[in-house]
Length: 402
Image (cartoon, rainbow, N blue to C red; front, side, top):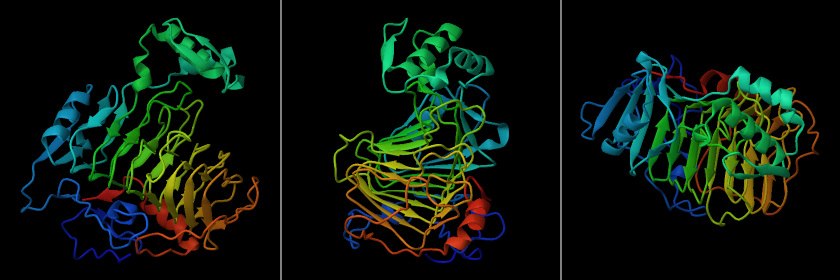
């Protein structure tokens, strides 16, 4: 990747004061491809025509700057996305609150945060809820079977989820269980860029709820320099035949607000996910505090895990290739205290490169390459693993400044 030159991009969104050698400040990886094998089959990811701030003076697209009104802004955000090419979230008036997932309507959009823009769910897990769940012994309940029928008539298969939802209905009186929709964005479109936004969820809990960011059939999207924390079901899931997407310089974490199900990133909704899709690049991301599983868990697709940093000492499984997946893992750094960082089941192939580094042995077994060596249809540079911790800790997340 080219070195980022501050003097050339003086009007662009930049990294604090000094740019890292590894951040090209432009779309790269699978989002720029239209084939999982042919390097000549390219795609020009433009979003709404601009993905930097200030917006260039000669830009002719429709731009809107949103500020928080302190109330539920779901409709405001949805209308702004529908009617404009570039949506600037200006955090100078405080957090943007949404009651449930906003559907991103229309292809070719840029969503860009400035002034510490945070998109937050209206609902959050309270200490009262946590106390009630603990008193009922929910953490020790079955997460596969043993459910029942809720007061609202809904049948739930798993004992832990059944009791969690029953308790929350009793505490809130909400038989519709509207809180389960506590996510932020759902993307089903093509050519979408999301940059420099912090996503804050209600806390993870086992209720089959929404993700902070959901890609359901999204294609040629670039999610860059964002921060994700406390998603109800997941922080950011990519499913339903989404394809050719890149996730770069993002952070994933959970706080004490989260209770159970700290499963951060899922690729492919189930083993029934159709093959041939879900090709995704994860580069220079940070899985940190509180993450337990799915960093990511992968079904289907060719997935490139490049120079990511893992520091969550609560991890029971980090990278987890599963049925019909092909995963290239190189230049990643697993910090001291991360003891279960890889396992695979029924993957088509896994290439575990010598460029990875782990401070401790993997308690799930020594990672090995299996199947055919995986190749990627784009040019890239693997940063030395020794550079990864400092570089990612300094620059990943919503760190872009004017």
